[in-house]
Amino acid sequence: MRTQSSKLQNQRTKSGSPNETQISLIRCMEKEIGAKCPSCGLLNLNVYFERGNDSPLGAKCDSCGLTGFFMKEELVPLTSV
Ligand SMILES: [Zn+2]
Image (cartoon, rainbow, N blue to C red; front, side):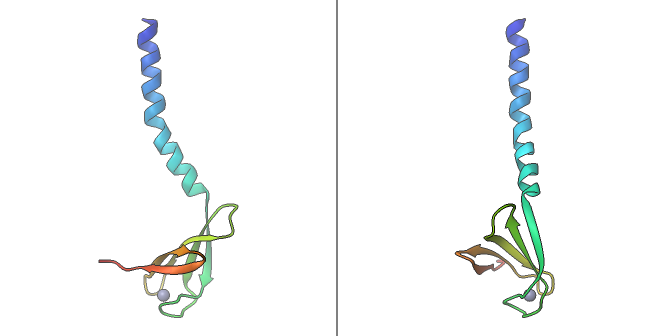
């Protein structure tokens, strides 16, 4: 009986951890709006940062829909296929 209950606890811990990781990842993101979009030239680019980190991770433009990620501080556009 003791073995059974400890097995149940293990399963619960395993299934709970991926969700917790996802939530903390979203909470770690910071958004900066009003950057200049390299595609349409309007100041509607949202830039996403990792919290506590100055280097941007990705960006999305509200005007033209451009999405991209940053590689060595340069915006690389993601083209939708
Ligand atoms: Zn744009």
